[in-house]
Image (cartoon, rainbow, N blue to C red; front, top):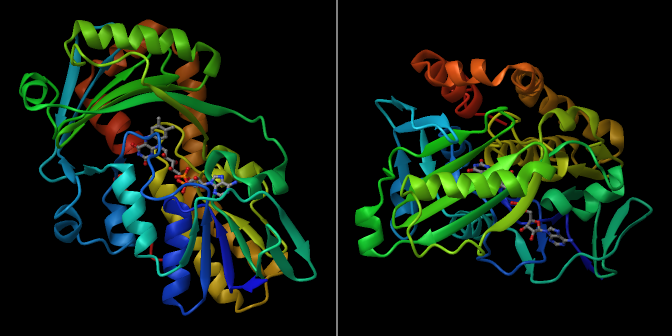
Length: 374
Ligand SMILES: Cc1cc2nc3c(=O)[nH]c(=O)nc-3n(C[C@H](O)[C@H](O)[C@H](O)COP(=O)(O)OP(=O)(O)OC[C@H]3O[C@@H](n4cnc5c(N)ncnc54)[C@H](O)[C@@H]3O)c2cc1C
């Protein structure tokens, strides 16, 4: 049997951020992931600036060998409409990354011992220890395995609460395709459904184009994705050679669920998608995953080896404080948006003020959130 101070299932942004902070505090951390890194993850791949400060990333260093696309504006419209609104900012308000690079970078520098390429199949608690696959033993377990996290299943069973389902494709453009593409790399395009319950995106990241579509009602996903692809083809956003069959699907839970789900118990905490922390209006999940990983680590450090539920409860409270207001706002805007007649939604998305101050600053960028100091 192998021992460590903290065992993390999942090496995505939640798991690697938690590992990074714990390792820096001197804990011996093991991260388990069923994938071999670098691995890809279905994701548009834009991150907000708070992440850079929270993880102490040096963009100049990062960008030397990896894709790093500063974003200084957005183009926002409705699927099926020729009208769109452009919003520009004076400084980068987001950055485009590739998950295969970003996640690998964070995991490798986390300082944790990595056990990659094997699915965590069994987890059991013996006394005050968690044992994974009868091989690894730790007094505290962090579930950061994303939407299908086995630790989350242990705490919450198979959870059927509201999810966003999404499909996307990321392709490398050749020089001809890149030159002919009307999508500005510094200005991703967002196109909403008429019921405002989902949106599609076109994001250029250096030589890569990422296109995807996600919505709250998964039953409508296939038909809505097909309509979005047709819309993009008519607007020459997709290179003619782009395959219609290479799209990948995934799902995630939204921040409101984090309030209702069990995210701590004796010796165990959930972080990231496994805790359901993605922002409801935009689907941004990387920053909430990172922040939940850091908050989990900070609670573990504070608990100093005593991991009963009461000692871990501050994590759930701090996560609720950090994401609770956004969760409530997300729930409210979802209710309001679902009740809006299509004509009103169309008028709102044609308004420069609404697009800039509500859709972008509030829903997508959370410009008023300062970086977390865990
Ligand atoms: C189509 C789409 C587009 C998105 N675009 C964006 C975006 O542009 N910006 C943004 O901020 N967010 C975006 N998101 C959300 C974002 O991708 C997630 O919220 C984020 O990846 C959550 O990070 P995580 O670390 O919790 O989980 P993940 O990144 O999913 O990592 C979980 C890890 O756990 C591992 N794992 C799972 N099960 C096991 C097991 N049994 N044993 C061992 N390992 C296991 C997996 O291999 C994986 O590496 C998007 C999501 C989708 C679906």
